[in-house]
Length: 186
Image (cartoon, rainbow, N blue to C red; front, side, top):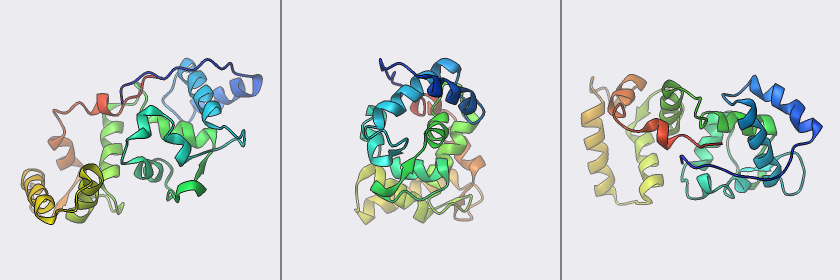
């Protein structure tokens, strides 16, 4: 991520009115919202007022992202059922908000934690992490996955209850560049 998106389309009066509404639900400035709306309008090729998650793959920031379907679920609280999942401009802004430079480290950490918490129970289990590792590595090698799972849980599961809580997750990624990895320059 950390890339700058450019577009040359201009906004109409309706789009400008949307900016005020979108400021309430996102971390974006007026300038960023202006660009975000233009990006949305470009992705909305059929001018239906919505974009499908498949259209999000047109954005280079998401093209090779194995988490695109998890991103939709975490951001919007709804399952991504492929071509049938459509996002309004409001949902698109909400989805993209965590990737704003203005989103705090805490917001980005909580977001990343939710991506790893596949079943949404507020903690990362070995099964959650296994699914995530399979997405990242595209591997089904059980020995490899088990070795990585054991290493991660040995480091992160401080109370040895078989789960990684948000606090544990935060400590493990404390020295990582989470802001850089979860930022798109609009």
